[in-house]
Length: 274
Image (tube, rainbow, N blue to C red; front, side, top):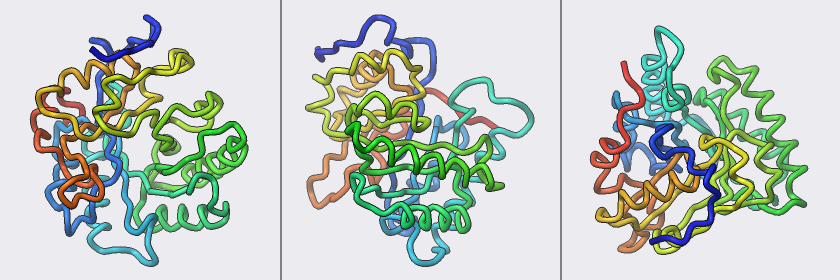
């Protein structure tokens, strides 16, 4: 059994709120057509998916990415049409996030904002995924400045309903103050061999599950239910589990669908509906 240290009130998703998917970023639509098509399929409990052309938006609009982005945007519009969503999965379902690489705080602010504007202008994204986000207290002021500006840009955009969504891709538990700088934090990204013995930071119990995401690779099919129990116990509302492990020439285990995609979709249950 995994060694977990979450306080009792952190077990918020156990039977109460529904888990949903956050997709860290599939390969280019030409290389992963099934993956991108699957995201727009009705019933997929999708919170958001990341669009990453070349560690950012690229130098010009990509027609294949434009098509994939339009398909996901239209699926979200259809899913939310006709009334207010009645659960958190549908409420945030189907957002497309632009990938911004913070390089652990080394990238210039102006460069990041230029990339953000390109994502908004070309792909009508509904938020941003801030990859390699700093985790230390010293990096927080710069991240706050960036997220404040990004929220303002999204608020001005006609594509980001609800002001957009910002996700900080820490991959581990950061200094607690980061929880107030964005909508969601990725507090675990790594292999199943680490996740099954992981410990959740106690301060996360002060926030609801939709504020945290876990990305785990190398999860065997036989341990899928255990992995979802851990996510619920630790208070994560967004997940991406895959049996891919980065071996056999796979540079990124999250770039393709897990072999048990249909099974995990059915276990979580439908989120977006028409």
